[in-house]
Image 1 (cartoon, rainbow, N blue to C red):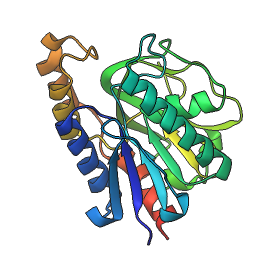
Image 2 (image 1 turned 90 degrees about the vertical axis):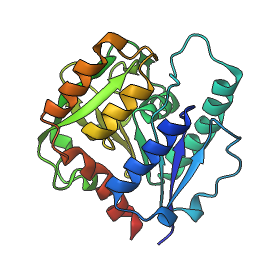
Image 3 (image 1 turned 120 degrees about the vertical axis):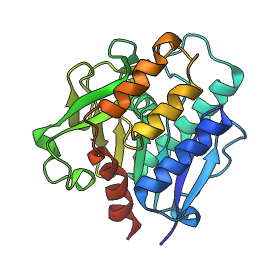
Length: 242
């Protein structure tokens, strides 16, 4: 099996390592089967899609809709946009987690803004009728729970996509482009331990009031998020890993 590639843009070493470990754990891959590239740390360079079974894009402290961007953020966005252009054109296996929504939606000419931002928490995700039979949702209930926390989201369904899952406060939670390009607004890689660790890292990043940290951690462990959301990752690897 060719390895999978996880692209990361987290500008915090602990957060980047934790994200890689959570994706590794929930995909069931061995470390040599999931390569890790931190795009915020160095130029992405050439990527030969033929070298990989599939590509994943992790979450980010960057926002596509940011009014002001550092030179590094502009570089990261330009490099990822060029890669996503190739991925979508080739219909190459891709799974974008949260930040991937903005990247792919922009490629499609959709709008990404703050209208459907969601605070850190657990939400109910509902599959659409079009999700029936989709390989990445195999074995996942029609309604399941997952963790979210994002400052931007799709403003309406982007043109030309198949909407696979929706939520009450943020209507676009998962969609597919073509047959093999997927994005999720919710975080399939996060369980309560992962979320608690991430909240501690990003306590002062504007996702929540730092005074609420302890209550949010209590919420995470008391939430109905049961692990069904992780199957998106396992299904991606099983379907495209051969």
